[in-house]
Length: 178
Image (cartoon, rainbow, N blue to C red; front, side, top):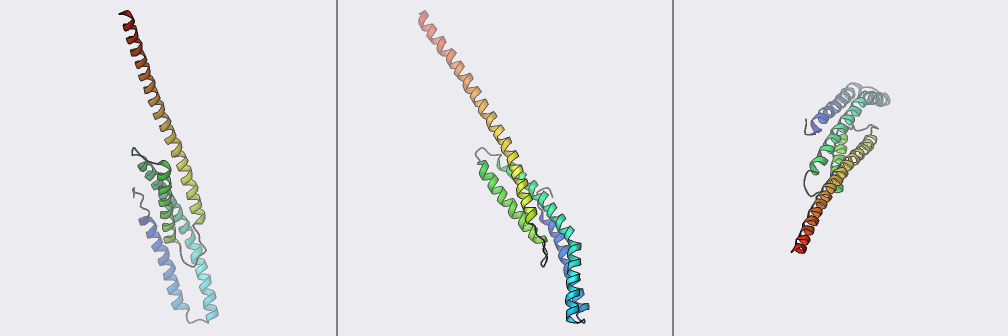
């Protein structure tokens, strides 16, 4: 989706991961409940470890996809926020960063399975670093635009002053020749 809506991509995989986890758990619970409780608990822990190991790459790939989508939307939102006449660059960056981080955390929590040691903190840190790099790039571009606008304004003011100077000199000469 070109609008940066990560939810459809992430939620379908989230559903698949949770479904796989719960189907295996229910099937195991039903079949293994006849065993001695010590054996049952040990085998359940082993099954969960194997499932989590198998699903971990999917979790990481979903974080990576979410990271890309949030960054893309972050950049687009900043550029959209800078299109008006009166804007505060720092405020646009701050608000957009907060929104992007919130979207990332929400999406990461959706794909995070319970009873795992998985974490999205490292990916969130990388996202923050990448957003800072994008903000720095856009800040440089914005500064260049401001400098160019100031130079044009000064050039126009200088040209106007020169014209006014010629006009004033011309008037003073005509007074002297009378």
